[in-house]
Length: 539
Image (cartoon, rainbow, N blue to C red; front, side):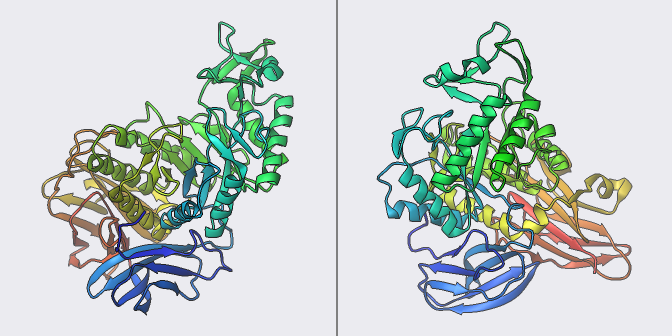
């Protein structure tokens, strides 16, 4: 979805490999303009354009770049491109979803899905509830109704997989790791995991749960996944669980530790489909401490109470990154606020959620299809995003992609407590009309400092107008913290270079004026909207 007659820039692929021709497509351009490629605060190249079409960007080294389309002094559109390095693309996961496999989906529908993947630079797509049954993925033939009655045509599934591949994204088929439907239950009842009363755990009235580590189940489940790869063409699987139980008894009295069973299952699936991309769902952070060591390709966490605040999200991400071993971290935080609040208030909540997640080094599963966002764990009950929300998502995903190397790599180090405040006196920020805090709480500017190579990156998230720091709470207009000043200790006689970037402004790193004050230097900061990133480099 794009605003009619509004210029748009889309990369031709969501992620480019080293052998790909790097290019962007310009749409709805009705005036002469200049396309520029940005990296690390500098313009690398300029390309005059006079009409819509595909613009090749030439050879670019592996890394992330910002794209700006300008008419005179005005930026009229922007985007980003990313070229994967020699390590490939599995260390990069910007995740989305599809959930509509009707037999009559049109070519235009599929093209709109492709546009959204390109717009948001999506590298992996979860195919939610594509299968016939949870314990019988392909038993319905080519057309069937899934376990909850939604129509599925495997021709549509394959067409969507092809759509993902055309734009450079992987297609991951959803598979519940221990759910068995009522029709299949007699065959698996002996492996049921039960509560203290002997009742099988389940989900609603249509699924019951088995021990995911039982050998006969692992053999069946692995074969089902292998057959799905062969028949449909998936690149891997999203392995789902429901967060409960943690420990249970099988009907034969065997004690089942689900942490151990889940790890065993991931290991078994990896052995059965060795080349597949695997993402396991650590529901509410269970059991991230163990599953992160298993042979999968991401650390994915679906958050619920008590992880309801921005501070809790930050803590979850920090724990995940500490055990991820360099794998990407993805947070599934469904913005149910869109179902209960006006779009503007919900958008402000989502902006703060994305700012929190991205600034702490993770990505966010939220968007999908052509114009949908998640408001419910049953992805079929998604929300149609209004144009303002579509634009918000594009700005923040552009920002995430352009500044990937300052946000996501595993080597980024949290240094706030070592640099900020009076005892350290190395680097800090102050505002004329708001308190600065290292903790996310109402009424403050939330400040965090990271070390990224030889640079220091300051993240400033504006909570000065917030009265509720739950990430899914409606948010009123952001507060005005007043004039901001950054003060830092100098290293030697040189003046440090300082840049600012804001997803709600140009999106690119812009140089700031630095004034020397003895052993320190000061910088007047641009006005703070929702999230601002300040980059400091000693020359």
